[in-house]
Amino acid sequence: MAKKIGIVGTGYVGLVTGTCFAETGNDVYCVDIDEKKINNLKKGILPIFEPGLPRLVERNFNRGRLKFMTDLETAVKECEIIFLCLPTPPSEDGSADLHHVTECAADIAKMIRDNKISDHKILVNKSTVPVGTAVKVHDIVAEYISDEQFDIVSNPEFLREGFAVEDSLKPERVVIGTSSKYVADFMRDIYEPFVRSGNPIIVMDEKSSELTKYASNSFLAVKISYMNDLSAYCEAIGADIEKIRAGMGADSRIGKRFLFAGIGYGGSCFPKDVRALMHSAEDVGLPLKIVTAAHEVNDQQRHRFINTILKRFDNNVKGMTFALWGLAFKPNTDDTREAPAFTIIERLLEGGAKVKAYDPEAVENTKLRFGDKISYEKNHSLCLDGADALIIATEWTVFRKPDFDEIKSKLSKPIIFDGRNLFDLDEMQESGFEYTCIGRKTIMPD
Ligand code: UDX
Image (cartoon, rainbow, N blue to C red; front, side, top):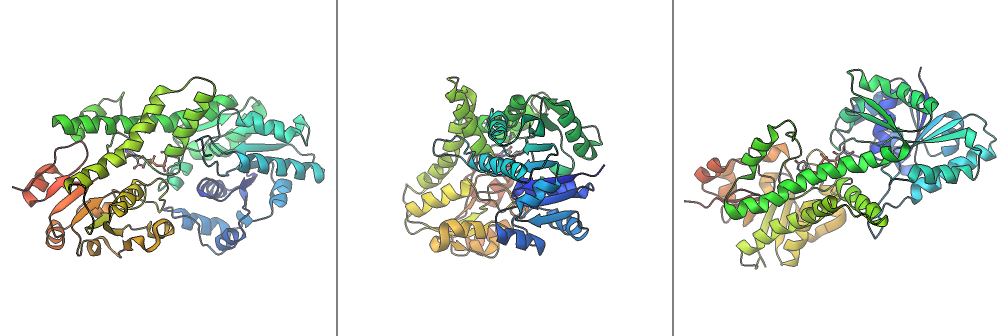
């Protein structure tokens, strides 16, 4: 049966989750304190770039199943279940800052008390929160209303940026952390339409559920850092990380995915979640050595790449111009949080070089950080004009089969630094480029 569902926070997780719940026939109340964002959403202007989302938002908004508002009280009165999809940014020390979640939970509890609402409410922690947060939020809410009036559930989100709609409509698994059978059944009911092909809904205790999210993201980060660590060794001994990836990935116990060496993971999740897990484990005196190593390797990898670039020019890039393809932390997103491209830009600017950059979606977010310190081009071809070398930082599809003749004719020297291993080494040898990539030999023109 269709439910009334409240969503607090209309960022990536909240907007996508709310829209997908509306798509399966529920009545969804999306709340945000940002009035401008809410007004824009009502006009169909989305705060994020996410393939497939605009169409779904429009359809469900027009059918009245998806509402946008700044008024939390209405959502609290109307909905039995409220998802907290709020940011949990890293604090200075790397631990997750929970004040948005705890303050919102307290506000909801006060509204329930002050409006004398007697219906049972389920509050869902959808944000990535450290182990123990469900207990913490429970204690906060219990200061205002009685235990029987509410439940707190952990229900971590595993969606990937760029595939958020797909991941939400067809999740590989749904994890629910609760000790209440009533809540587990309620949650199963709203998630069942998304797992018709048989993917599991896994119910567990709250703490295990909270840790499942960190453990999953950190494991993927470990896979990537393992390959990046190995890539340095490959370069030193003349092995090819791409061949090794194929050889490893064919073993189903290892799996093909997340074995791509590159210039390190970025984005709003992996770096933050890895640090938060490290911090939580250190807090109880049990530092997680493998996760810590993954973090360190990731930090070094982007610097290793830029060090190679600088070394190629005897650590003197003053007055040189670099074309930079890709600014987003990965393709199909405008997100530049913890983007390796930003480290590359910073180091080039420090060295007195100029940067001409292109990205299909992330230019506006880059301008917020670098303003007019670099120039932004309308397409990847224009970046090359007057540049001394090309650097590739994001594997957008448009960069995969470039016109090598054009690149060669435009660059002052035929030099490419590829942080994403996009090109075939034999082809690069034939095309006469000096080609430096990750974990593979450097090609020198004949
Ligand atoms: C990730 C998780 O995949 C998702 O389940 C979770 O909910 C949020 O965090 P996201 O940050 O959107 O999603 O991106 P993802 O596609 O997982 O990539 C993360 C980073 O790893 C990117 O910087 C990407 O470039 C990098 N990566 C990924 C590699 O360097 N090599 C790989 O083989 C795969």
